[in-house]
Image (cartoon, rainbow, N blue to C red; front, side, top):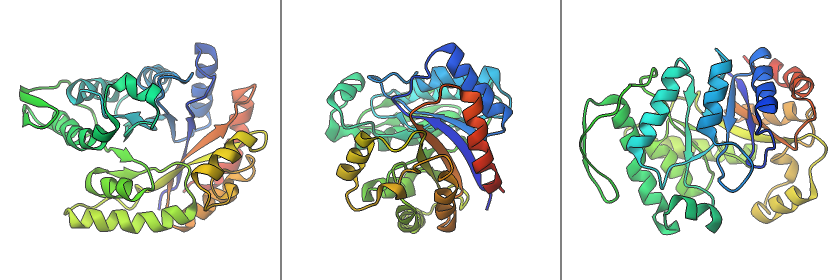
Length: 298
């Protein structure tokens, strides 16, 4: 099992200007982190993931570039296929897209123009279309939400195929990953969630004559820079009253490795470490994180 550790920014990041973001990207590349993952939220301070990952692609040669997650319902899959194929080509085949339904937040939902009750249906129609646009010469499709006749997207991505990751631990999300996903990257989850979720995803995949690479199971793992904030503890108590906060969030950089080891023990191997809070100096902080997580990589 190949263990890899990437790095992500949450939606409330303040690393959204050129100087700070460049310091983060350059530090990740220099320290040989596996990947950089960026979230999407229109109403928070995080930069647009595709724009920011394009910035990162231009400054790096090895760092993989992930969206964690990008909202799919409300986007035209033909236009999105063009956008992501272009980024994959310009980065030399380093794109790792992860998609989700979007947050249950009226302020966010109005940006995408999709009723909450339609999100899953739109997702299920759009995602297979992305794969078709990336691999077929022309796409004909007559669906509930999209209609295409001889639709052609160029250039083709470098990766054939681009592998799409999904997240979530709810039963519906596990089923969707089994039916459609190439990998599983849940967030705010515990090792027990992964231990229970992986066999369920594999079972659903088998029912649909699919197989997910056993190396493509991971987790987005938050860690606190200066202690777990009370507001986060309260949020987790409300969202996940059945779990201990330290099973979801590492309380310090040093506690990150033991938590990752628990995930590894239940079969996860691809990780995204996400800071709660942000350091004054990215270079020094990333070196500290690298010292903790790099010995876990195989």
